[in-house]
Image (tube, rainbow, N blue to C red):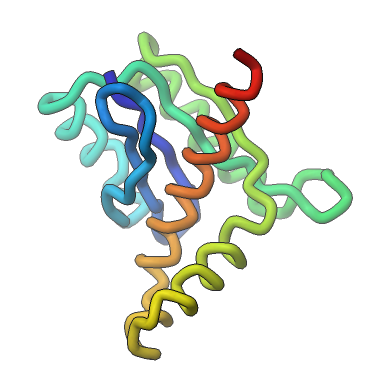
Amino acid sequence: MRILAFDYGTKRVGLAVTDPLQLIATALDTVHAKDVLEYVKAYLDRETVSMFVVGEPRRLDGTESESAQHVRGFIRTLRRTFPAIPIETVDERFTSKMASASIAQSGMTKKKRQDKSLIDRVSAVLILQSYLDSRDFQR
């Protein structure tokens, strides 16, 4: 069973997923926010998902950022649409900056590095990896 992670934005949603053993986080896709539920429904027809992990936007001081209300709404919609799948949240501070930095170090062309959908996918991977690391730490 896989874990599916979301880097939710009002325009685009980055998605990442684990392997069936839940050891490795990999980028899955970036979809338009309005299409994300249909995308997830189609994905769940093909794969078994045991949990959703959603990045929680926070400010440096730990308080909620302006986009947190949109993420809360998205989580409510996920719960309503997929009531059998539990949802965890992960502090996503710095994930976009870390994603941009890792993309910059990858040797990609400047045009590729500026692809916002790539940044969203890499951010989702970082959110999912953060969850996996914290879970492993608690064991």
